Length: 241
Image 1 (spheres, helix red, strand yellow):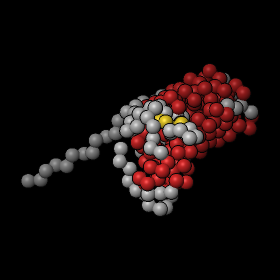
Image 2 (cartoon, rainbow, N blue to C red):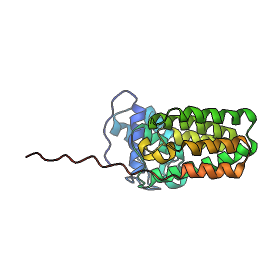
Image 3 (cartoon, rainbow, N blue to C red):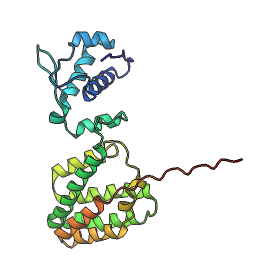
């Protein structure tokens, strides 16, 4: 893969981004050796410190293994990378080369949300649970503004996930909502079935507040697995004689 020289501002970011994209796109395969630091510095037109910093960040993402005095080897991102890779790509308006990634992230969101709702109902402290009905009513008051309701549901689910007491779920939630699910925006119009179900959100809040864990899980599942709406095709313009 041919690399392009980069501007002097944020040179490490540019080196990092180009090598990351080369690995994720498959231009470099698992166990391939990257060029050495000196060669990369010459190719990009930067100093070796910028290259070294870029390689350090790539190693943190699980894309390469840097060996002191040896070759830097490419790792299989499907085995070694985490959600931080999706977040890194989203910041540059790019996505992983996986056709079903949006679906996959929404399925993960549902898994985390359903169990977080159950746990919040089971063991959430009273203060955490009391915040949930208030968040639901703030969300409901924004109807039918789908964009505003979508933002409000993030606040609601943050209360629920925090109330679950599961730190791993909270960190996963942060990754899922950062950068619009970390895979590019799902327009709120496509989530209309979920966002406009005010009654379902109120039932969820009531189940959590009253400690009915199985009901909370059921209501959360119904909301988070609601079908996405197919975008309407733009109206065709009639030809004039």
